[in-house]
Image 1 (cartoon, helix red, strand yellow):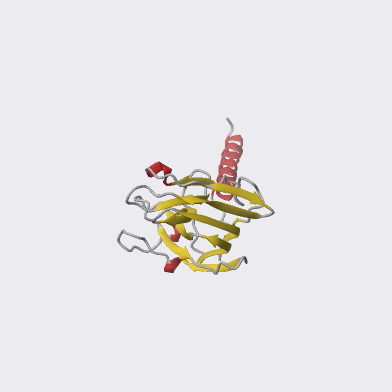
Image 2 (spheres, helix red, strand yellow; image 1 turned 90 degrees about the vertical axis):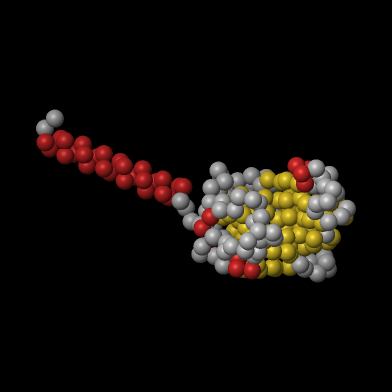
Length: 199
C-alpha cells in the first residue's frame, strides 16, 4: 500500500471511530429529560420504557393492584393485605434506563408530581444503583382528599432511608422512581397521577 493510500485509510478509520463514539454518546448517554411520565401511553413512560408493578405478594402478602391509564392519567387502586408482621405495599415503578443502569439526575433538585389521593397512604422513592438492600431514599406524599389534583415538589435532599444509615442520595446513580401505596393493616387505596417529572 502506498504511503498516501495508507494515510487516507488511517484517516478513514479515525473518522469512523470518532463517528461511532459520537453516535454512541448521543444515543446511550443522552441527558435525562425532566418529564418522566405524563401517562399519554398506556404501557410506556416518556422515556419509552415499560412501567412495572410489584406488590407484597412476593413477601407473602395478598395486596391487590388495579392500574388504569386514560386521558393522560393513571389510576392505581386496590386493597392492602399485609404479610404477617410486615407492612403491605403496592408499587408502580418508572424505570429511567432500559437496562436498569444508573442515570445522571444531578441537574435536577427534586421530583414533582401532579397527584390526587382518594384513599390510603402513598410515598415516592428515588432508587439508586448504590442502594442494595431496597431501603431507597423516600418521602411520604400528603395531599387533601378533596377530589382535586395537587402539585407536590419533593426535594432530593429531603428524602430519607427508613431503616438504614442515613446516606446522601447520589443523584448520578438513579435507575428508577417508585410510587408506593402502603399500610400496616388491611385497607383500601385509590389515587391518580397526572404527571411525574424532575424539577
